Length: 405
Image 1 (cartoon, rainbow, N blue to C red):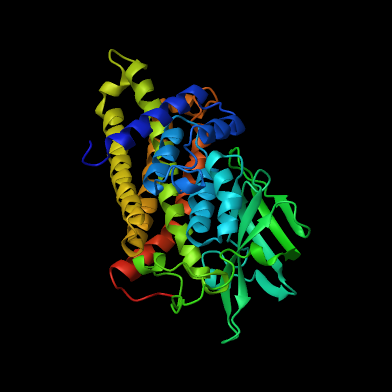
Image 2 (cartoon, rainbow, N blue to C red; image 1 turned 45 degrees about the vertical axis):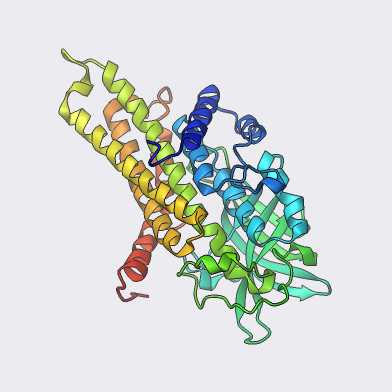
């Protein structure tokens, strides 16, 4: 396996799996988060000079997958260290890095991420949360929905838009909004999904922010690069060479977080699928209705074997995506990350469904803990981008087919 994963990665996987087993599926989220942070698992992708492990998304995805396989996934890992810490590490000012990265690394701080809007959906061009300059700072106004963990996060990284002085058009910018900022209102969305992290709708009503809330501050002297014309094509390695500042870097900053988000969502789904499959396999080995355990019957064994194969294939694509991203190849990573997220979401739903089916009526009881995964598994097919939009991406960007929109 060292061809696919180094010994260091295998050791990390084993250590996180042991942590997950200690906490189990009835885990206390805050306690697990604190211990994972203390052990350095939450910050494996954050630069060492800011208290992290100096690794990448490859290491962070292992942490999330293994905690999920143990039945105690940490959803905020997708957001706080993967998206927010990545964006700040690559594009933040030195002050922003010193303020946030050490706490994000050890788990004492966390950050939510707000991009989705009620009327925009998957169309980022329709984001209407706008920022205007007021004196030396900013005023932010708009709405966001399906923002995870705002109540437990110290701040939310908000995707807004500012007016380009040259063209008059709106362009994306990212702002760090502390949780208790005046005008920053949150309300819980009533979800059927059973998850420890709640979902929120945000209303930003003339939220006043200092200049330093803009990720990256101003444009560094000598930067002559531009931003892509649209947000569907990931950026190449050159985007990492000169980290432009806030107002001219919105798309660069956004893509710095979106590919890790997809990779980590794949890890989340694979971990959940593995957890469900392990329960089903254990049950099939012991449950005996006639002469032999039900796992001896091909009608039970073959679907479970297929689910295992599909989870393993999805993991391989996730590992490829993480390796490409960590190597700086954002274009190839964008393609692989979308494919990994798609494959993992499909494999997770199938594994959970087959696990419930294997247990029969027991699969719907609280005792076995599988029924709650039926709804949770679908999250990976829907968020952060739907399977249909990924198919659009692959058909347009990978196959060169014409757009339908």
